[in-house]
Length: 312
Image (cartoon, one colour):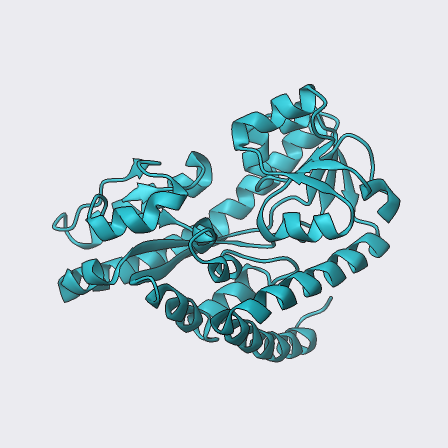
């Protein structure tokens, strides 16, 4: 199984998943985890050719092959982990994702959920929309497209290049991942303004992906073990990952990092820009349009329950 994810937390979840498969199968089903054996864009070809049996990652890793997959990793102004999991498990999300993967001959199992990313690291505070004009910022995916509509100049930089880009003056802001991962990259040593919420990715989903042929060839007992291991890993990521963020924020405070909430006017325009981006994407792809429409129906019903059942 090839892991596409950052080794800490993301990759740890893949290792725990593999260990759970071994334990639940009594040692008869073994998964060897390899870190980045093939790159994101090589995944489909490698699976089809049998070079690897499975991939640990997230659907958005395959946006180059199919942009419609991106929303199944997590998307701007989307639900919290509980809401995303409800959508995937009982609200039609898994079926919508599989319909998209089917056009590539792939099979996915939903195996984990991580909490919100930070909203972004900045050298200077963001007080109004004007502060975003011409700002050079490391960003990725739908978040980058949203920011571009508000005048930001996004750069897609790999993890290890973010801090050097700050130090060289190439960027004035960056969003990458969860606070615990950003801590590992030492971003807080060069940028001291951290914004919340992480509107661009309130959750990150995890999956095991394989070809439909590989899935069909597995014995029924092994399929059951994989599904059960996904449930165990989902539970672990939903709890342990949150505590890692709590610990990271405590370290940031000790380093003098200033925590901010995005100004309301900026959040309002970011949301409007996201509505434009997803409308443009849905217009290009009927399967994405259906998935997005179905999600909105789920969101309205789920939101109605939340507003009645819980205090703000």
